Image 1 (cartoon, rainbow over the protein chains, first blue to last red):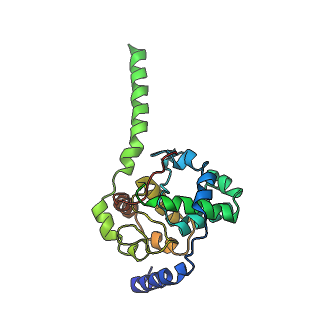
Image 2: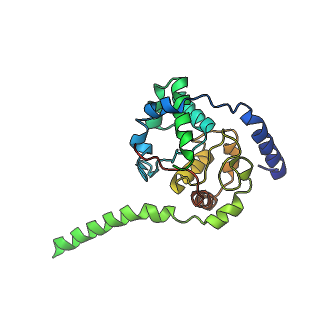
Image 3: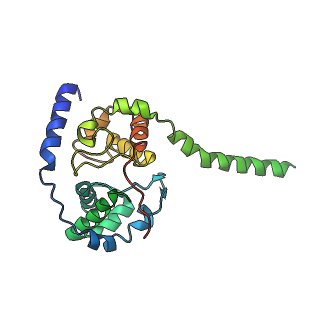
Length: 110
Length: 114
């Protein structure tokens, strides 16, 4: 961040290069069933995480690729949150794609 | 009477503790956040609806979750090659303002139990 122009240029480049494989593979209908457990926290509006306290993030209408990447990162121990790591630990790649597809599908008019 | 007073004091302290975190979290200024969000826009879009599906939508996300996410990136508790340098130079106020801005936009939905 010492050179803001360079940083901005790199960022723009990253934005152009990274989303190259944007194909959505998951099955939203299958995901709806697999996502039942998720609603125990993400399905209660305003529900709080505790220690530290902050609201459980909204994921209705979140982007498919991001959701899948987040679940993989929890499963693979790259992103840390005890409940999410536990939940993700048993998910297959297909489960992750299906769940991500379901939540991503809730964006319009829900 | 003395016992009643200490009881009241205890209740008052408990009440204060319950209320305090919400007041601490409510200090972000969405307008200041919008003007600070220019560099974020390259990936997260003009109003927090991202330009590509690998980047999360931020519009409508809970303010306190956004504060936590940015603070985690800044502290290195959450790692991401793009977000780490973005968050590194943010002040607490910057984080509060950016979170207030994105939380004020229309976008992400709460799930309802079906």
